[in-house]
Image 1 (tube, rainbow, N blue to C red):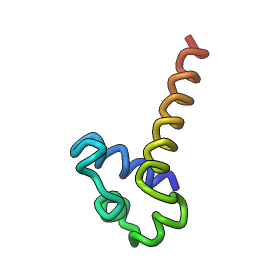
Image 2: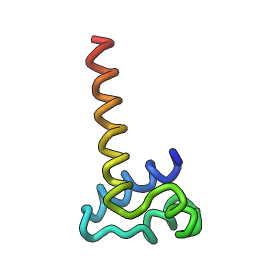
Image 3: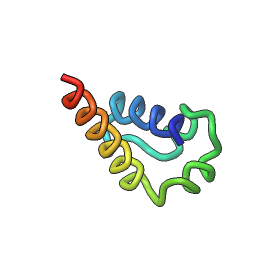
Image 4: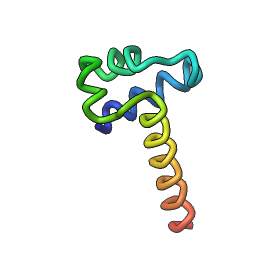
Length: 65
């Protein structure tokens, strides 16, 4: 799943949310599109998980300061 999230971050950063697709994310992650859908219901769910991961990382960084 981390490879999918890393790919999603790359694709969203390059294209923006609306112009990005699960197919593009799967291609960057080198997974079949169906495999991404095993982990995430849709693009919005993937985006939300990525957002939550980044919030967790920010929280950890703040706690270490």
